[in-house]
Length: 255
Image (cartoon, one colour):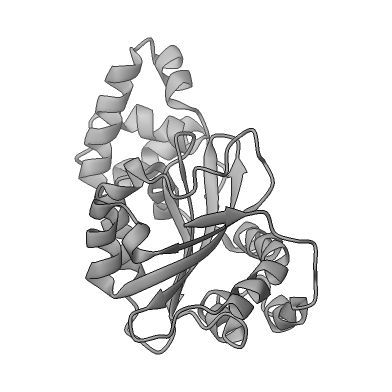
């Protein structure tokens, strides 16, 4: 595995012009690989955020020329490997600059390799990652086993377009990410009761406060509860709702 900081060259940025025309549209996600294919012939990609300061979130993913298993890969990643993933450790708080990472499947830790790479035919990854406070934002392009290894020329092309691609995808996420309507706690309680009548009063209180933007620590103070108790009720409520993370709670009301 190697990691390095991208250069400021912009010789390959022209390939992004077609994507700029798709900004704010859902076609951006499915068209990304096709637009980049002349320079980075990846068969799949994923854009996500993980870290101690956020719920793991898959923003975009797709495949080209093969069945799309990117969502299954994400689920496999969350089943355990992401908790011990150190392949992006160079993107530390001491180094906020974007970082390029190139890794082959044999270099990936065993559990991660077995559940994600080997299970889905992935052989190589090139990424650009950026530290965001206590989380990592990553854009990953994967070569699959039926493809030739990325060449040095292709890695150089990726290096030149990566900074612009980072800015472009982050703006696309900002434009298209679902946002729930603004409601007060009582209104959220009513909405939650309609969605899942089995939620208990305490579960309703905690989920409603999450939807207003409160942290778990803030909820504990507001309700006079211990933080572990808040987490317990949160987990029970999420189980009833069939979700695992806070961003999925917001997504339930995005419409």
